[in-house]
Image 1 (cartoon, chains in turn yellow, blue):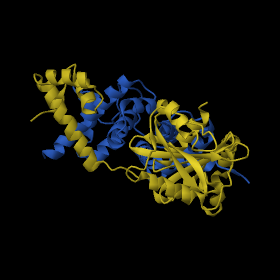
Image 2 (cartoon, helix red, strand yellow; image 1 turned 135 degrees about the vertical axis):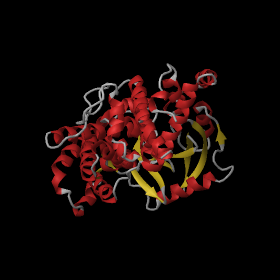
Image 3 (tube, chains in turn blue, orange; image 1 turned 180 degrees about the vertical axis):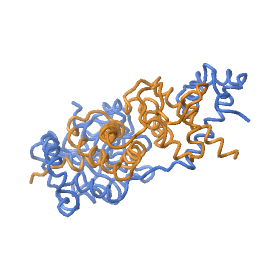
Image 4 (tube, chains in turn cyan, yellow; image 1 turned 120 degrees about the vertical axis):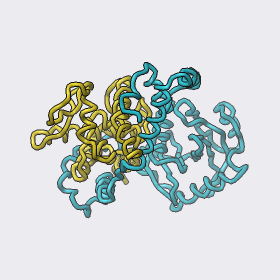
Length: 250
Length: 178
């Protein structure tokens, strides 16, 4: 029977572990495999790593956040709903101090928009997800997408590619919202799709604000006389991140 | 109509990682109530720093805050009760029993917990080994994320993981072959 120390000492064992954890590139992994074929220590180490992982998954509990904690923090993150939350008062001062700082950059004037507009935006997004409807112009080049809109719209939508930020532009299309033609730009995020709807809207620039409809997230803001609505099933923080990067890009 | 919308953005960045935060806190402070306090404290801190958050790794950023809050909590507790904190990378929690000088400290830890289950053995690991293995095996984070959260170089993450796994391997094997 193997004792703990017998699995011990080969200078490659940390590489064996890195391979086990998926941290090696293909060339490194191949070199290691060649070494391991002749090294009983590294073979034993590989087996041992697998046993530990399996045992941990079977026996070491993953502690999920209790519902009460989640509820408290959700209430705290949205102070307008917080008055009924128990335990709120205790940390109210700390929250207000933190909130004031956050508010100094996050103060948002929500673009008014027509009633039902979030539903229309979501409906447009879902319609577009059907096969063949996603893009009218397929291009990863903003210099192709931008001219494509010329003559199809009575305004020039700002077209930006956020490929370097992990949101590559995949194309554009025309859509109808609230009885008018709008531009829709299609961005990718891993295997998800983000639709960004754009149309002219008078008023000062606003910070992004968040809405949810049927499990889809919508982030909207106003910038340079344009209303911008991003809709997607990506996680909320990713969509916020998208909006932040889009706004920051010149 | 003006309103504060920081709450919603904060919610979007932090709340998706609440399970990860609580799991880490729970394994670090090893007490359900203390872990809740740690996560609450971390959330308040996160809200304070939220405006200055840059980058795209919200989970790493929040877990780093959770980990710091957990360490602060452990430090406060240390005066009140014994917490087996290691003092450095090459030492393991002191054990009160006489030690065979031929044993290395890790072997000693094993012997003292010969009858503990794997979860208890994990809970008994020195805190810096424990946080590393929890982030890797339960949270399934990459080395570079673990390095960021625990504030050490990747090489240290690798050696801590290795030591943690060697300690746990003996227990896993013992259970497999009674």
